[in-house]
View 1 (cartoon, one colour):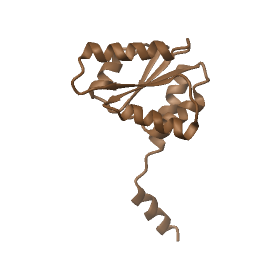
View 2 (cartoon, rainbow, N blue to C red):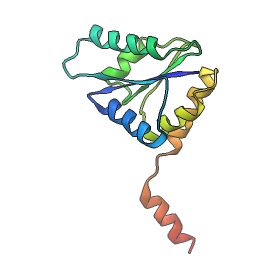
View 3 (cartoon, rainbow, N blue to C red):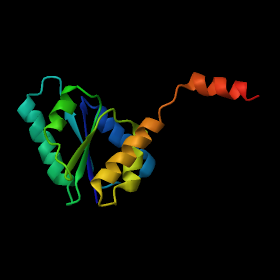
Length: 137
């Protein structure tokens, strides 16, 4: 089973995790780490490391971060290790839901790619959908 840790600014990750639990129900091997605005870098990395160890079942861990270039992502990047830890930035709810359905796999790279693609494909500009529907009429 692939583990997951949501690493975000403030309580965003915890609320995403709460939403996943509300939709899916009981989940395993998915935790959240909140990086506070005043957190020391070493303190933040320590929290991530602790969560990694809690969810790692031997098949690897995906670190989900809120924003590329932000402090949580930069901290998460220091744990990146081929075949053991993958990092996905720009995390959204559909991405995390997909993760709960595919995490039973033991192929970290495949899980990360699948979740990443689902996350990208879940973003829409509503006005374009509306315009396309109007054109089809």
